[in-house]
Length: 168
Image 1 (cartoon, rainbow, N blue to C red):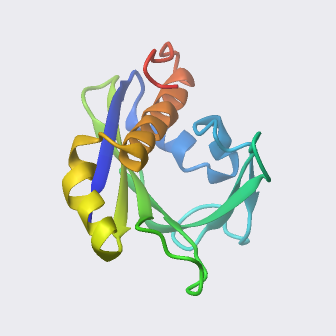
Image 2 (tube, rainbow, N blue to C red):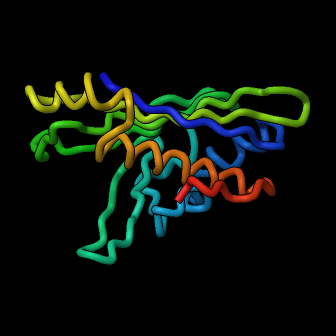
C-alpha cells in the first residue's frame, strides 16, 4: 500500500497542537481546502467521531467527503478514515486514511507528520502505486503531497509560522 508523508516543526507543545488537530468541528482552520465541516455523529472527539468535509469546486458541483476517526491517542496520534459506500466506484488509487503523528522535539517545539495511505487496484493501479508513487512524479502522489504540505502550512500558521512558499 503506497503512502506519502509530509512534516513540519511548530513552535508549540504537543498539547497545544493536539487541541487544534483534534477539534475536528473546526478542521477547516488547518485544511483550507475544506470550506466547512458538518458533524455527522453526536461525538465531537475520540474514536467513532464522524464528520463531513465540504469542498467548494469552482469548475463543477461542490463535493463532500465523510470521515471517521478510527484511531485516537491523545496527544500523539489521530487517524481520519474516509467513509465509503461499499458499492461506490473504485479507483486505481483510493485513499485509505490520513494520520497525524505529533512528536515533541523539546520543551517548546513539536514535529507534526501527516501521512496519507492508499490502496491500489488493478494492474495499472498497482503499477502507479509501486513504481510512480514513491517518487511523487505524477498526478495523484504529487497532488496528495502538495495537499498534505498545504494542510501542515495552514496548521503552522495558527501558531505564528509564516506560510511555506511551496505549500500552495
